Image 1 (cartoon, rainbow, N blue to C red):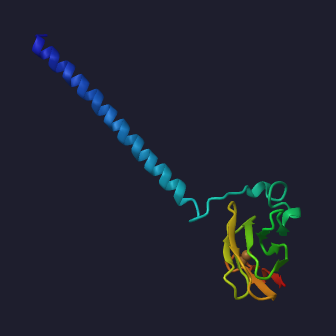
Image 2 (cartoon, protein in one colour; image 1 turned 90 degrees about the vertical axis):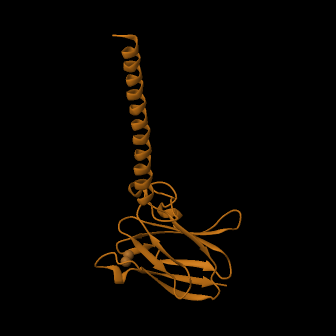
Length: 166
Ligand code: CUA
């Protein structure tokens, strides 16, 4: 080849290499967008604390002995509960009046939820995720705590009681 043709071939080769690099970069960016979009779409909004449904009953925070009301060493009050078709565990929850209470709950099977009487205590319970909120009860007395997400044929019989004590 003449010198001018040789340098054209070198330039064409370099262009091809750079074109491939650009295609690779665009491909990586698209893959990142698809992955993060799918990843976050699979999460319930505002809640990313997870729990393994398969080991829920045998280890960790939600074993039976940990369910119900706990007064932590620092004085904070935590209520842990588990929902399953078609009951809550525990069936009766006792909490103090005018004190912040943190609820931590999850489900073993379907999506459940609960609301406590006419208070603003209200959440969904989703398998694989821990739902939490903190609230204070202003009145003493007993309230019903029904499941408020349709979860199957026993849904309307699924409820617990909450007792607020002074
Ligand atoms: Cu559980 Cu409806």
